[in-house]
Image 1: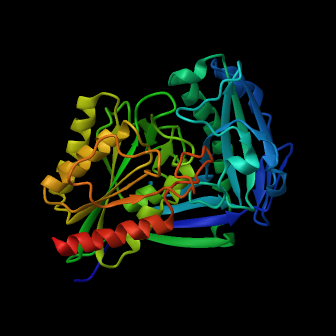
Image 2: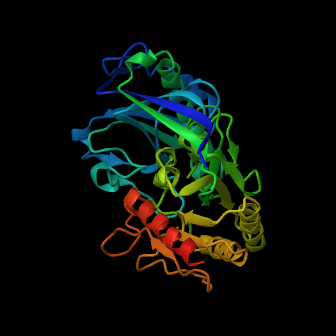
Length: 253
Length: 154
């Protein structure tokens, strides 16, 4: 029998080859991303558990340096048309957001084993979930109040704050002219009647601080609007392949 | 015990998940979707949520399942139970998990006969290097190939 197409997702990638700080956040199709840090003071102020946020741009040749434990590597993607899993999504390549964390007493924000140390050595570059060798990293380093990393609200605040920054980039990314993308990928949820029916079960973290998973955020790979698997009693949730590929999961550990 | 840096699946990993990629590209499969299930703390809860996932797979009339876990230690309880629950429902299952030399399963059962070990470090340990032991395209291909064999044998 013929395969049946259920829905289509188009992901358009925009490659970034230069990132710098400036007065106003903007990106251009030539591959330059300029980031304004003026939002940081009020953001830090609004999060009682966060003492300090430091942002840095790390070029590929500049990785021989200290990093606090890596809480997450986040792709910058934005929904342009349709709902998660269908329509059009814009995403940046060549650049990744690196969320790292420590508390004011120097305790790393990690659950079981932590990855602080030399940035060059503490990441295995080029894995599906890690930056490529030549990616530019935007480091978003959060210092939490003493001992705030030990219970859920601390790490959650770090993710929420980082998402505020990512949203500023997403709002710019949405404005990019789709015709000027550097890569275009089409994905389909489809049914193949008569073929072997296969399901993937992903067992994810759901036990507490630094061990949580957020599902269906408002924006791809985002935080805001997502539901915690812990709050859902860790019960199974079904996600279609296209929803999954469109960033339905935010790793919270 | 839970998830160490080397097996940790970042948000980027989920975005580019090789298992989703390989399974949806496989022409011999009708890929039904992804069941995401948490790993609660309490033992009774672990058995409950994993069994619900297996019941769901059965209701989807799945011919086969791949289950992956990025943690080890107490999450092996969830992993072993869900594999058992799928298997007793007649669904051939392949597991993808970190074993290496340090993470032998804390619980096992007779159904855990097809496991892809995602370890890649020479010493077979949690190296604390982000992503070193995480699932790659090759692991996903292996899991899909094992599942094909297991479904054929049934």
